[in-house]
Length: 93
Image 1: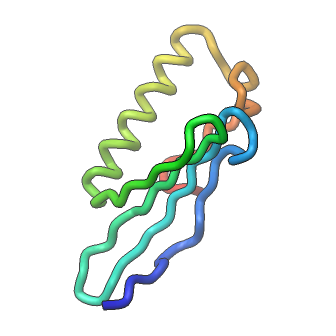
Image 2: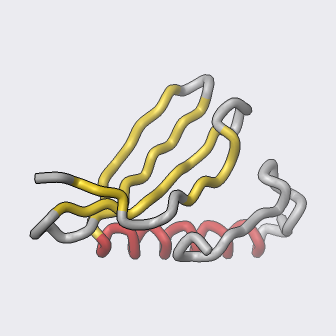
């Protein structure tokens, strides 16, 4: 059964710098529910990937949103992090 990319690629970060990068995209196969593939890579740590069900992606988005809220409450704001202040939006847009 063929699996295909079903969306655009969403990338945050740069894989060749110390912070690394995260890439995510939607994949699916005929008669299979869609999953989101997430790849993370850092030059000093290596790479890993996961295929998450949509319910797991929602949990990840909620967890990341909570971490951003915690960071904002601690006094860090746009431009205070190593990613140039990019906060992105849920859904990759």
